[in-house]
Length: 57
Image (cartoon, rainbow, N blue to C red; front, side):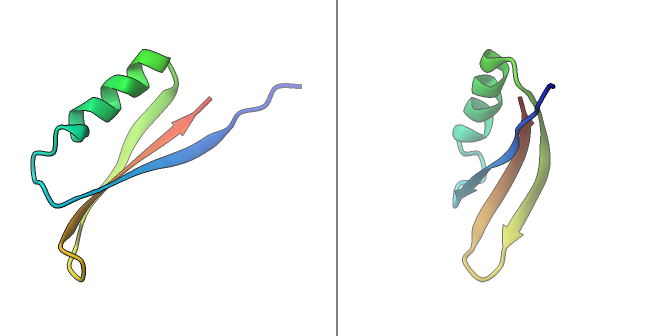
């Protein structure tokens, strides 16, 4: 029997060009897990930019 685990990785930031925005995909690529950027949202209430990646192993 094979199993897969899926999860999300969320980044909340106030910086429009936050360096983590490129560091996170690079780290995911280094681990060779399947992943995709699911959404980028601007949170009006908190003034935060919310990035969400989905990964699966």
